[in-house]
Image 1 (cartoon, rainbow, N blue to C red):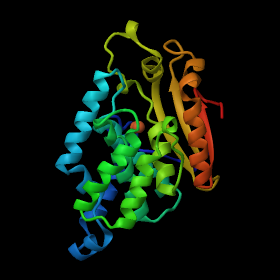
Image 2: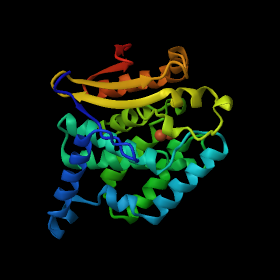
Image 3: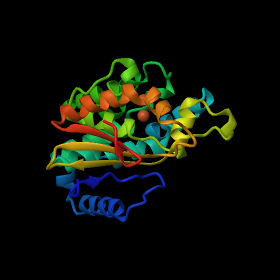
Image 4: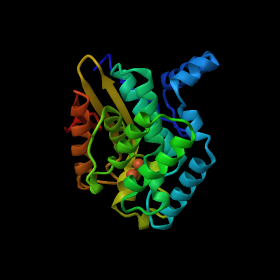
Length: 261
Ligand SMILES: [Fe+2]
Ligand SMILES: [Fe+2]
């Protein structure tokens, strides 16, 4: 996969300079739009991210998830998923507006946690609907975002229902990293803490030529055995495979330089 490109990792962990360059290029392109062009293109992720309700709900959702023992679900996770989802569709040659919608849906995908963890995909889709309507998105685009947000969780019966939805699933399930663990006591880790803490790097690579989306993980096997990873993530990887197939790609899982799926 020499021609494969890798997803940017936002939220304070952007180890590769290329990712930052890509982000800078995107911002530069946005600035050169005339007001008419910007209006025609529709609202962007920046407008969503800047909305007071979005900021408050994601912050509160993260606090509430922390209170019931979940890993980090805040702005870092939202940004990582937004960049990942945009990157996947862009790498496969999808048109820019669809890539923007993927970033928006990924940014909002966990917002429903502000209500309850259970069915947070569905509640999040309805929260997103009101906000996106107020921001001036057209109904066609809101429908795509709602479907993607509502279908991102395998435990809630979610599965890829559109290219945007597939990109959100792949980006979300790929965000496995020790920075998401907030339990300060390693001796009190549960299996989710252990597996996330064991992941010292996670990178999405997309090869348009080979039609393959791959998740490369580095797992410290002294922290968690690979079996524990599979115990938690097997159903997520099945969801990722289906999402990749929706994008006419195969899915590969590579852990510690060994291809496992
Ligand atoms: Fe979720
Ligand atoms: Fe998530």
